[in-house]
Amino acid sequence: LRIPASELAKFMTEWVREYKPKALKYFEGNEEYIARILDLGRTGNKPRKDLVYAKQIFDFISYFFDDYFVITDQIPEQISDADATEILKRYLESYDQSDDQSQWFDKIRTIAEDMGYAAKPKDYKKHPEEYKGHVGHVSTVIRLAVAGRSQSPDIWEIQQILGEEKTRQRVEMVSLLKSGYGCLPSLSPRSYAPAESLRETSISTGHQKTQSAYRTVSLSGSGIVQPASRLYRAVEST
Image (tube, rainbow, N blue to C red; front, side, top):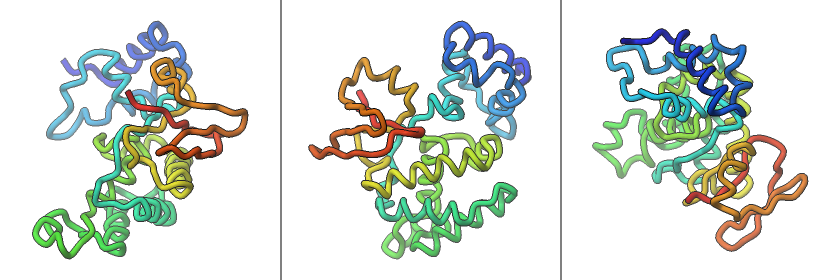
């Protein structure tokens, strides 16, 4: 049976209270917001049927919560670091929370075409020598900045739930990190996580050197110092 999102939100709140108490601040008193998140991908012609237990559901929606937001995937190989930074810059310049889904994607398509990427994947497949990549590769850069994953529910819908301030904050932060040393998220095997996630993963990594206002991490043998005041912290993947 399909459980209504409102009921599922109540269930998840109680599960989080017992098993993920640090995340309770995102759930308790925010059941309507959580219900909107849980409804993602549950409607339409091919509703999700693979989320069957609470931890799985929490992990799937965790990118909505700053303390659990992690960039886990790499940018497409067709996108250079310089282009990824420029894509995010242009995306921020054109972003309007009030755009409908069609208007929103038209802007991404324009960014892609202006930067030498095919407006349609089939055009790139047919004539790969004429393009850097296609619009899907460009949109993946944006998806990674907003959701931290190359695969997710519809990114326009995610942004509508996150809101303009949070959407811009994430894109701006990823753009800032990339412009600083051009390795996010293409550098493997590193990913970028918020402070809460770092505390959860640091037991198995032990490679971070944290200072009061800055953190230093070793990238290819070089020490890189970057501000530590907001969402992200570099961690070693295991």
